[in-house]
Length: 405
Image 1: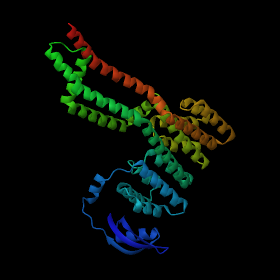
Image 2: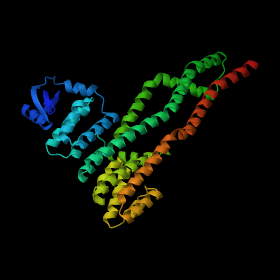
Image 3: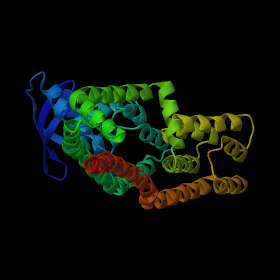
């Protein structure tokens, strides 16, 4: 693929300039015409062989904000009736992130080669998560791609808001922990060693808690590089293991069992599943096919297994309510909504209610996340203060006793 710099005129008379990738000059001209642009000048862009690799090396990966902006733009162009190929090329021209722009150009080439949009997106898993691809696939299969993009933009906006609120709730506790850690570092580096020198001159022995703190301080001062290396190796090993099949399944199941936090993650994930399932059912997709397609939308292997078990039960002739009850992942209120939806034939409406129910609960829990963190912070700070008290005041008391003697 070569890069061509072009100058063209739109149908409304305005001018356009940019760079695109194509197999040949004729192919580049055809791409411009497909976008509604009349090429005026088309020349091959000269670039060093390693220039693109250098850009990719220093260009950050697309963030959640980049993906949200792309989805909003794609939805707006699709709603306006702009063809998918033209819309993606226009977005690629105006995307500030070079990695995302290059991925969009590759998606355009895949679409021209006959691949579906979901399959084209799936070739870029580092940019488009599993949930994103699954919802696009549901939109393609149901003929409601525009609605799928709208739901995706809403989900991404909700995720972004959730992340910002969680960061806001954790900011104060982290500041307190860092400040306390700095205080302990200063005391163990400068204050407590002074007591050690005084006790050594008196030929007395430091109290046991102080000796332990000094030993830890000495080890960190001399072997900090080993601690950093072990932590880095542990993080890399954990990430590689959780990227594998068994490791990912174990981590997806374990993070749902974390007190309080796991419950929030579970309900947020089920809200995503319910929205995707409701959209598929409303579009006329059969329940079995909808469950199979939407199971990936959970982005959790453990929950996906539970949902696929529901699919197997339905294929054996069981009711949706019965399989949902046996899965053990839905609350009694949600099961009642499913029962009503199955009796009245309005499963899509009830699943939408389920999604809204879970989303309200998640929003409430996130707003009160600081109330959950405060007791943990009190225990942690209490333990740190106890360590400081034992490390500093015990030597002082022993020195007073020694002076009295």
